Amino acid sequence: MKIVTYNVNGLRQRVSQFGCLRKLLDSFDADIICIQVCHVAFTFMHETKLRRQELTSDLVMADGYESFFSCTRTSDKGRSGYSGVATFCRVKSAFLSNEVALPVAAEEGFTGVLESCTTGKCEMLAIADGLEEFSRDGLVNVDSEGRCIITDHGHFVLFNIYGPRADCNDTDRIMFKLNFFKILQKRWESLLHQKRRICVVGDLNISPTAMDFRDAGPDFENNEFRRWFRSLLVEHGGHFFDVFRAKHPDRREAYTCWPSNTGAELFNYGSRIDHILFGGSCLHVENELDGHDFVTCHVKECDIMTQYKRWKSGSDITPRWKGGLSIKLEGSDHAPVFMSLDEIPDISQHSTPSLSVRYLTGVHGVQQTIVSVFMKRQVAKQIDSREVSSSNMNGDIISGSGNGCESMKRSFKNCSVSDGPVGESCCSTTTISGIADANSVPVSTNKQKARKNRLSQLSLRSFFKKSPKKPTPGYEVNELLADCPNEADAFKSNHLICETPLADDCSSSLKQYELNSCASSLHEHELSSTCSLDKEKNNVALLEWQRIELLMRNSLPLCKGHKEPCVARIVKKAGPTFGRRFYCCARAEGPASNPEANCGYFKWASSKHGQKG
Image (cartoon, rainbow, N blue to C red; front, side, top):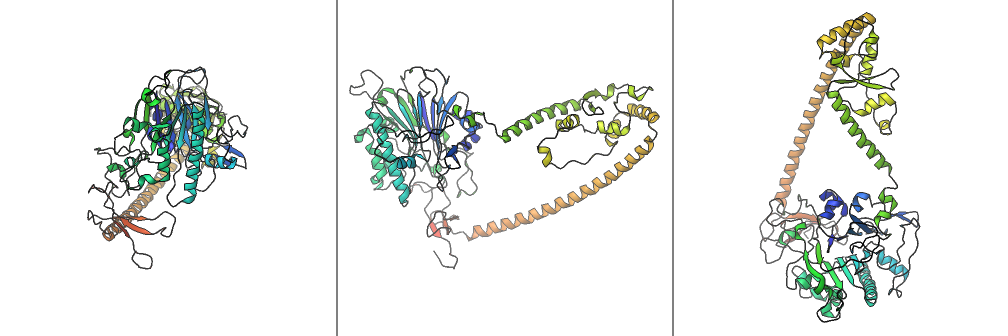
């Protein structure tokens, strides 16, 4: 059995990167895939009703997987749609299954107080065991950001966690983070007291030791969150194993996250904040004996999947970091972590829990949107148009009857022209104007126009399109007959017997054709002159932009470490220096011992009043 945890930094972006959700999930070849930072949220409607508007089927459903989501419910500024976690379970059957990967129960959040709306009726749930000392409002507050989904797999309870991030000067977020982990630890202790095994995976936003952080300072491990993390571990008297460190106790520079805007991946200048923790006994009967614990007995391997990093070492595809101004990296700023388990027996027969996405009617397709309806119609029209185009390329003519309710195809070359009545000829109408109307569809026509002639039924999209000008009668017929001179002579002689004003019509159509040709040539001349004018303007703009770039490059200071032009940046963080411009070394961030890395040069740009920073 294989479990993977991955901070995708936007599920839609990763699905787009791999082509579809199924390909993304299959790439891990894992039984349980825990994803963080999905960027999905509830949409608030009225005051109490909630809907998962951003949970579209292409993001949450894949054949062979059961999925469970926790979405952001808060409407606080900067928090709506920020987090969100999801657990995907690869199963052979979602019903009456013995697979461990298929959970027997699932819970959104870890406090037990979130509303359950899967049945269409929202009902308040009871507070989880062990959390009775906390107020309901406090529990709702920590669970409203979509940071946890719990799945019970029989042998163990799996917590998929996205831990809060708190800057050192943000007092509110520091208090939120402290409260979050305090309540979470109480829930773990309650389950451990019930003799349940607990597996915790996810981005906890904590590096426990100096070994897990680049260039850690002497006071690094004194941080209160790092002390809390280490207190959970067995070697410090806690109940959990840090599974990666249990398997690789001395490995250095084993990082799972890198700053996204400094090119730090180039020099592997990151931190290990994505973890897999496990607490509880092994599955053997003699589990009370010394040397028997879950990690020793059942964990085969645990490692970082570095192949998912955005920067590939030694690859020519990845460009060199030059301030990040023109570099677009595809992928998350995190790397997945996996754990392989051995000797995990099947469990009793069960079916997928009610929290599964398959039971959310708006996602599964019971409720269709108007956009999806028109998308399906558009695809059908494209398929039909290809069929019509292929039939027209074989020399077929689509001709409509007088009332426009029937259609038929005939090959023009197979028509037999006789001296009999016009009704016996291959054309279904007797006047040139009628033939022109019937055959006014060009060879490269689409099915939509033919459909309009036959059914006279307009689509909603057609109301927003400008109706095309009616073609000149006789023009298409003359163009068609020009390709078949023998048939054309017989055709014209046959119809001259029936229609006396044909000569006038033909002469008028020829004049009209000449006028159209002249008009089209004038139009082409105007277009060419307009295009040349636009091209000239673009060239002027390009030269001006190049001049500005050269001027800016020459005005940039040189960094002292490499004597190279710096990169200009603007402070975007709220505070007294917000919006102020500064210069820094353009190279990728890396360890101070590496001369090829960023030298740390920094200089404020001149202020608005001409004063130096």
